[in-house]
Length: 334
Image (tube, rainbow, N blue to C red; front, side, top):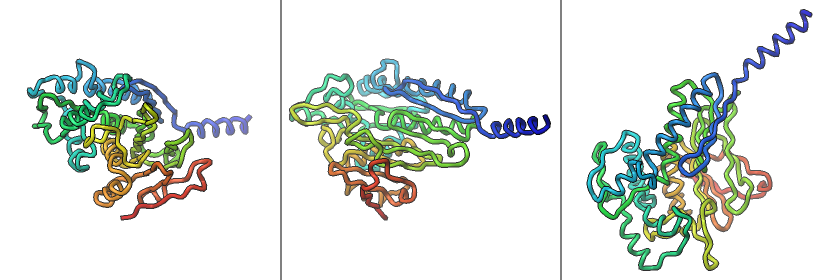
């Protein structure tokens, strides 16, 4: 009996070392979000996360008539007061727009709508329409003063390229403050990790093959975000041509840079989200040049010929996926 008791006690102690897993799921920002947190504070933290996501969606939605972005877009050039979250994200977004030379432009919403990506009523605008749309895209015309913004009449904001990254970043910080030390938050194509997996191993994040259903590679992350933008995510076909939702602000048309997928890994979810779009627009050479100039993040580039490149910071943090072990991976160095 003593041996049985000691064995049971040992098993109980061992099981007590394994943190409890908590899962939740919610729909917001036009995507299904899945959250997993470990430890005694996990359930409370995930309830907070779900409520916070809905709060941010209410602020950032471009179509919901009660949102702050909707109010800005329909203010006919008049200034609009913003909440702290919206003002902070707008400031960070404008900085990214400037840093990328307009490859990211949060005023490209009229072009996205004209192509039908907001409604599903897909169409190819005429050359004259595209010229007119491109003339409306110019982030530098957005006037932000503390918590007040004024947008020239006829222009419209859209946080589609940054909102989920910002949301993941905010949730990670707030869950840490609630005592969560290990969690993974999946927001569509965005992944935000908190700490490491229970036991100390890194989180393993797959990078999808843009031309198939498999994973080109698996990245190891600890306390970072990973965001992928790809032409395979939202698209339509017309007259034998494929058109995707990632717009080139210069042409108001889907970006044709030669890239099919860009994944950004870094400490800031907002930066990762915005740069995944911007580097897709820039193309292979300019994206590599941008990384060399700025760094502070890492990237995976995949082009239409199947070439794969990673920046140097990922060199020891990836493995090729099943079925892709024979692929060559180029390393972009400073």
